[in-house]
Length: 196
Length: 347
Image (cartoon, rainbow over all chains, first blue to last red; front, side, top):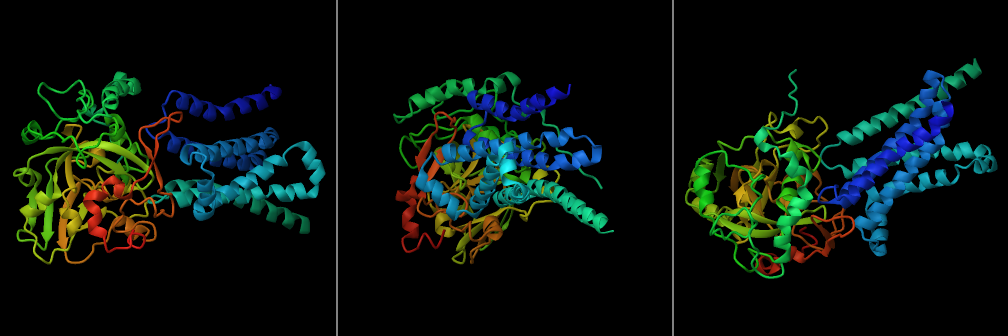
């Protein structure tokens, strides 16, 4: 039973992508598929980021280590969806016009923030193999704490895009706040019990 | 506290499932006729047109909206078809009726592009009055029927360019705003025209959102010469039929040389004034949305580059990305109004 968990989670995590692919091939993404694809892949990036951040609290509350064992894979899925999101924007919105892409990255703050978040996720993904964990030692944990910054920047990226109704950003932002707050509270608690 | 749920859509508003499922093929059949003839001047009307009907475009019978009152039928009886030349016509292929009516920015109904279509089921467009006030000889509140009485409807095929860098080609039914303005005899003090959209929290679910940072009602405005320009249009119909709620029924503005947000929908107030009015988007973000909002590929919006646009509909594999033209290609008829203005400053 246990050994089917990882493959099952893997397949589940692929479902949003497969559904998007099917809709794209059937031309079922509405009249502006470039925009629809960008929006959907962006949302799934945020969702996978939040799911990844929720795994440690879930393990703490249930005592089940299975949660934390999915963390690397689900984190990599966040990077996967972020990559599709970035590629969709570069291809379908900007048509691979490199001067336009560079201009956008530099001149539009919400894109700069989003791209920075992507770079962080890329660095985390590149250092996710077990060999890298060994190689980086203590620094690995320090580097991977940047996932919190990546999540905050992701929410900021969304907030900056929304123009008249910030409900969606408030929702994602609240969840990030809670998950981050949990981490901070836990750290403070450990310090207290060590000192006492 | 009474919180109303978005209501169920009226059966008459629901697209039959068979039509919905096959809409791409359905639209392709109809638009093949339109697309095929796009290169030449006259577009054949879609199959459902009546005999002797010379309108350039008709909504598919299964999807067209019926007007909410009997008096509309007479107005839609005699529509002058679009001519064969710019600016009231373009040879570019039309955006299919279904795309025009499910992809809308009408935030009073919700933030998603499909919200106006799916969440406007309770929106009432009849009876409808417009408060016409300010520097005119006959201010007052007028029934839409009376405002339209002296007016003859005509068809115009305009490009609509959204500030989000997508665009459509839409066959509107309506009349020149200049005709309405002349009815109300503005004085010499009337330098600007201000418009307001209806707000009704009961039937417009987006207004009830607690996270909206925009203050309703939606307001827009034009300079007097822009309002009197022959291109400025009041639309009451689309593809030969009554305007759907999501497109701004029963009466909306169409200013084709400006970004789409200037083309205010569901108008309930028209005010003639001496000073430039505040507009909703300019109030929200003055550094992004100006009063003039003329389509200009050389002036980038802080959020979107404006040098290109996505002509809808498109697919991921055959994208239609075209170069944006100054004044959306209508410069010949509007550029003179801005001769002495720096368009980068007055964006």
